[in-house]
Image (cartoon, rainbow, N blue to C red; front, side, top):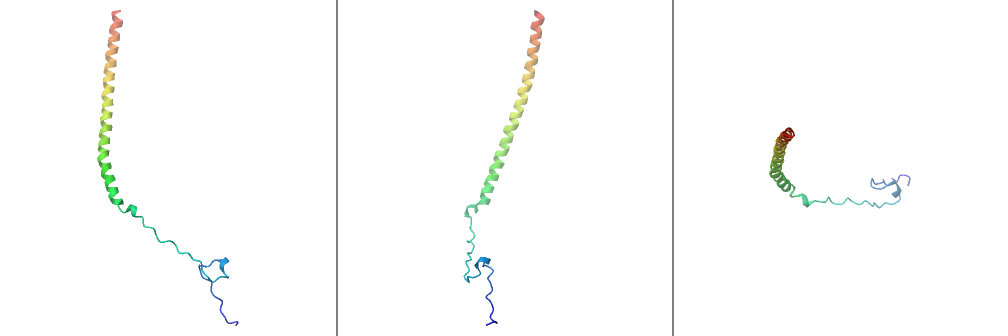
Length: 94
C-alpha cells in the first residue's frame, strides 16, 4: 500500500476544496453579441454628411453676423461724428 499514488489536485480546485474530488468549475457565459452596432458605419456616414452640410451653413451665418457687426460699428462712428459736429455748431450759435 505504500506504493499507491495520491490523486493529483486539479488546477481548478482551490486550497479549501482539497478533500472533495468534485470540481465546481462554472464556465464563463458565452460572449454577448451586440447587434445594435451592426449599422455603425452607416450611422457614422449619415452623421458625417449631416455635419458637412450644417458646418458651412453655420460658418456662413457666423461670417455674415461678423460683417454686419462691423458695418453697424462703422455707421455708429459716422453718426457720432455727425452729432459732435452738430453740437459744436449749436454751441457756436449761442
